[in-house]
Image (cartoon, rainbow, N blue to C red):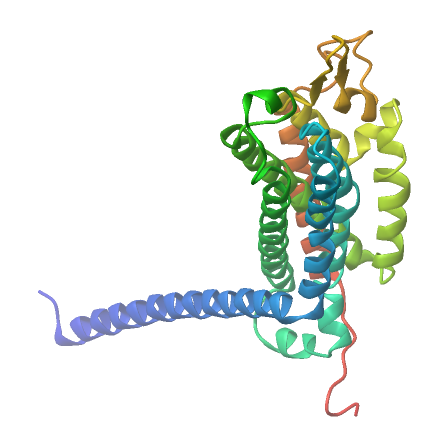
Length: 317
């Protein structure tokens, strides 16, 4: 038979257990709410800042060039401006640049503006702060890239003469839409990889912009265009392989000559290896970029958790 004292003890234990579980649940929701607020604030910071306007103007350059080309000549294959603008200019210059500009400020912006003090005062792990701000950065850069890539394709293909006389030089709107969506997907994959890389650099050095620009110019700009194994360490090499296998950049000239724009520009030796069997396949390229992005994100979060940030406090002032 249970005594009144024992029953009271069991009730107290059950109440304390329930209270502890409720407290843990409330703490978990509170932490999630804090991280979600940080995510939303970072998005707002990216959208309202000058970076968005500057990057928007830069990303309008390909569309402006496409309109200029169309206004000066009708005797050009539409695949030519598509390749030069969407697959040379944007991936070579704009994608790494937008990733560098946004990812370099994931933590450094908070330090410069002294707002990191308020982030560190909360019981939120530093690694979680970094990952949430990185996620907001990836969303921002991905939306920016997708939007302006679509604008570039619209400037190239919308309003084109699809008559039978011009069929050999043009791509119909349905096919152009498919190519646009494919390009957007590959560009987003590239900007995610670049953002993860530059975000990691921003944690280990304060000279992220200088190092990033040198990396873009020397590694992604020069090394990736050389037919050597060192280009395996570049992002653009893998995105080019994916694009080459997913899209066609071949021109059939009237005299029967066939010109492969991508193979020539990207240094793919089709005479020696016509099916690119010596290069990674599409699945390997995707895995490489995704794994590298995740690895840089984890390394940066780990380094951020170990790092001591020097901030101003009211006592020091």
